[in-house]
Image 1 (cartoon, one colour):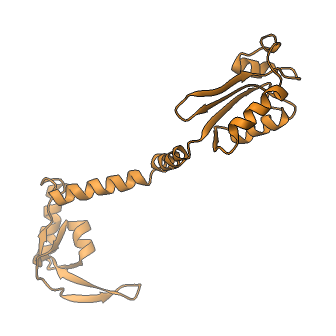
Image 2 (cartoon, rainbow, N blue to C red):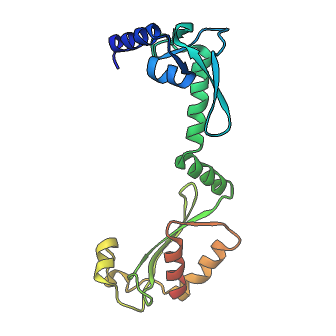
Image 3 (spheres, helix red, strand yellow):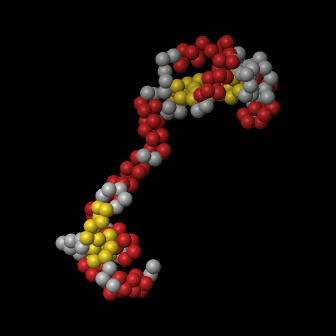
Length: 198
């Protein structure tokens, strides 16, 4: 409803001396009762409560939305709501979790494998601290063939691994490194399974 239509609706309602609830005054006429005005009558609603109705002639137009600049109190309230919304966001929750992990000074582990199956093995293993310092980075000689699709992902072929150590040669050093430390692994269920299989 534009301004002309709104003024016409208000004038017609005043001429007919009509009465409305605060909700209808606000929604249909953008009006509210003047300060100190009492309802002309009360009605029960369907929920057992009651509401007052006001003569439209005893009401005043509401401020137009966006006409006046926001007060300092409104600006502060908007800022607080904005911060609270950001704190409830997934990014904020992930940030809190990451801060907890960082406080534990975990190690970060990543692997490359011969494939995704139940017989596949780890062929490259890296462990870093949370600052990115490399603590262990080695390739391993597998006892199974490298799946062509896996080779397409990591680019490691069997010829490159022919002189690398076996899992049994690397496992003790890895166990010492990880002993008593918290560990972060991007796809932990997969990498853990691959380490057990190898």
